[in-house]
Length: 378
Image 1 (cartoon, rainbow, N blue to C red):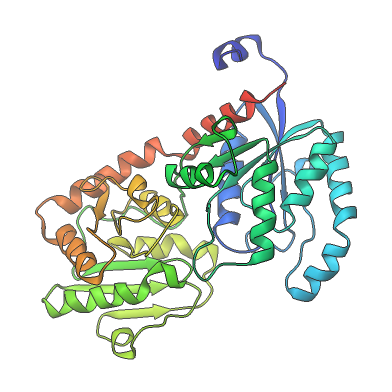
Image 2 (image 1 turned 90 degrees about the vertical axis):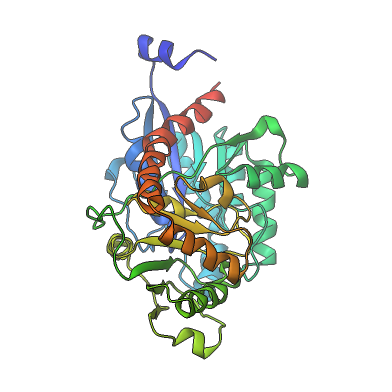
């Protein structure tokens, strides 16, 4: 393949690429929005975008290159719309072919993704799939969806992961070979409303858990760790914000200094939530990698996390945050105390998070993603 420099010098025709994300909720909507915004500035590509008309975060994108589809919002509409799926895919692929789209990058797997992949293959369009999780997390296992995603992984021209942990699991499971695998990184999210947080932490020290609340996220363990901190006289507060239910003792959930909000969070409120914290806590019992860490670095905020899955790849212990020794309440409380009480550590970790965010920026990610797309160009 010719170098990027020689491509630039000869000013070749742009390659047409379509970004696809058909989910309605969660981080995927923010991810495709921010990738699309950065990719629009990459002169190598003419970008098209296909999102769900039911998305909670409508994408602002030129109408001429926007290819939205109507998905579903519940079990009944899923059934009815899936009956129409062959027609939906045929129409979309026809529009992609008319626009001379040469590659599709699916930002996050979807229950209809396999149908799109097979339709694209028949039309001669390459497919690249970003795989966030090699295995379903506890509480997220859906047999039909999981089978469809695994088939999509096996049939994609290229697989992109955000961590070596996920890449290693896919290789070990035999779903993909090294030649089809591209290891990138989770780009840093930047949300409006974060402002310019103070260099030093507040008093009391403000700990934030943010994101969907599921059993593997370890919120009960975090509440236990917080109780240990308070019992030891550490001046701190804890906010837990995210959709889901917490299975924890009532005395832990109602202890002084704890604020819990388990409702839906509007995307435009995320920046303000992050700005009102001194650290983001990830007490996960398992993990692939985390978009929450990417969002924290975008503020920037130091992160305290357990050393599970791909989290240890995202955090440089003592430089961008603190890794607990294990996924236990005692060790997690000790990690938070280390960040609070070690002289100069908070300030250096916040500065380190800001530096790390530059190397993990959306611009760096899009350059790397563009290289992966171009590496398969005929």
